[in-house]
Image (cartoon, rainbow, N blue to C red):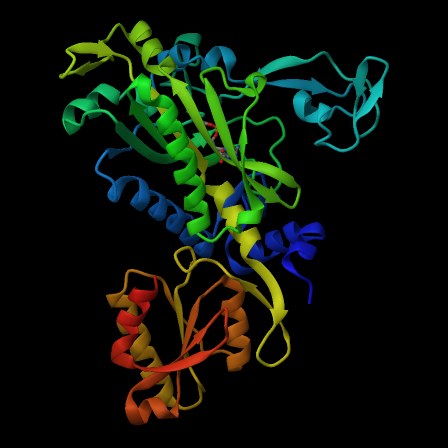
Length: 454
Ligand code: GAP
């Protein structure tokens, strides 16, 4: 059987895309109309994985802390926000177009060979696809524009937010005042962001519409380095806790010339995708750039007043920011295995951390043609569905082996089988996805057994 690293070098990405489509994780958007390029919809299982990622992020970063508060701000904001934040001026990618085949490229990626072999003629780069001449580099702003209200004139232009962070900065004073929290103070938000990417690619890695989980952690400027290091470690460990293999993760500090217009320092948590190392999450020291600019543009006082020193100042901000879809892709890739099943057949298994598994438990009657066993299984299934806050599945179609295979492939950690013995002593077997071992427990223990595992 191939190992996970053999697969990575071969066609792991294709296998994940196919599994996602086949089993209801992710499908191309507008498929019945021939699709919309690089736009994806999340089916019943994909929605659960995304929700699990978001819930665990929220739990760790908001619920379990006493210095972080939640926010849900609007996607469309006063356009002044983007003037103040610098996005109108600086949130752009360098674009070049091939004069022959008219393909468009991000110039920085082209020079790094991300579209294939770099072709140069003298001082000039050529199209990596057809070796045609390229246009001059021009800056392409990534923000989607639309109009507010019925008139489509300049005064009604608004933007879809390209990051959730600005909604946090403009609410800093509101949350500071209502929470009565001293520094450090964190504000967390999960929500959609939009970027008119020049070349969205690699399935759900780079898309134009995605969800971000962002935390703006406001600190005393004298402590910025300490908190920057703290969040780098904290966020790296979050991925490890959720099961990503350490050898597939690394921290990469940005060079000065890569830093975003607002950042003093930035570290990427990178994952070893089948197409190479890629950014999973960025942890940036945004300094007081955003608050200072919003104060300047809004003419509202956005400083923090320190009761002890009786001084006002702009806090610095440490920002861990991560995409939900990109994380989901890393979790799926990392957990995909092909190995031998109990009966010697090949099995595909997603060894997802149970916290992320879309279905936590599947219930099977051993045979479906014995009504009494079937009824008992359905009784257990419906009772668990009502009592547990997790997705529970029921399957009676095909042999037990085939049903295990179906659940393995979508990462269900435990399968419960109801058999003849169940009718005698109210016990069931629970089969573990990874070890394939079975144990017998009583029906009334199932609920607690599961809760202890997750
Ligand atoms: N507020 C800071 C910020 O937005 P970023 O590095 O541009 O920083 C943060 O984005 C994270 O958002 C990335 O690490 C990635 O996980 C996700 N992300 C950014 N652009 C994306 C895209 N086009 N498609 C999917 N995820 C994206």
